[in-house]
Image 1 (spheres, helix red, strand yellow):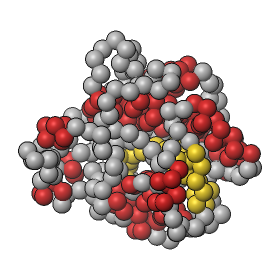
Image 2: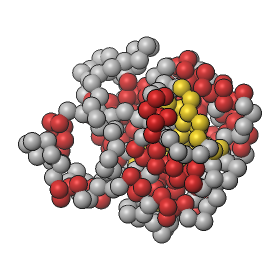
Image 3: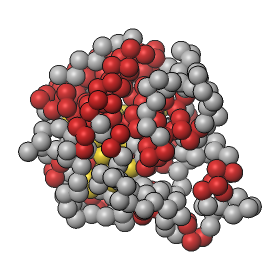
Image 4: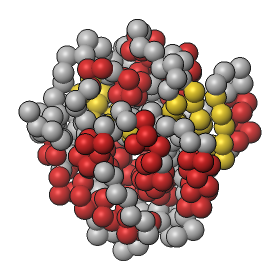
Length: 339
């Protein structure tokens, strides 16, 4: 059996018994996280908050690094065993400060959920000049995972989960100009390449880390209602995709096909906890199962969320995965020895 998912070697459904309508409660049933420690970026809103609630109910202690501390504390009110800490994924120093504080606690890290993300935003750059979707969705999480590596190894059987998206199908990663310095910025392309990066990171991380007992996964949560991910996207984009009418209202027939938050977070929870994934890593998942490799055999319709599935070969390609790892180290000025 293949030991890694280079070039999609393991990219096929495994018959989990779950589907697009499965909820977090169904996926976590019978699984205890008592004594486990999890870090969930963006774990105070949308599917991140739903993931936090599920982990806490299963017995885990959850640390939520947040850019908006006030909002995080408000949204997490009433949840036990949740700690809120300051961190901004576009701020190199704040990531280091957060990670160093956690490492100083001496705790092993059983679950790292790289969940936070931004989507379809105007052109912005971090202090280093890196495009914001690439910086937030990939580089920040790469740095965070690297810094927390000693704690992940300490857990002995940790899992790292990158919340990606079907949006990776919009664009492969552009190694020549990832920060839109040579060509015109397109927000959809920026988002798409950042999600392709999430997948490639999981592929390479798993290939390097499996021998340390650490497995990595990426996933598409589905088309989910009631998240604030697309809050900055111009309405024209949604209208162009055929999901909203001229007045900016979502078509009822589209809305009823969207997942609820408990369904949107189900695949994250499944990747983080399912015993079916013991011995399998580096795969891109959807609907609480391993996704199919998209070789042009799947017809995709934006108005039919159930057709937005599959993973592009370029997003699990071995050469791309290794190249992205090297580029990430170079751009961040760090060395990530995941062994």
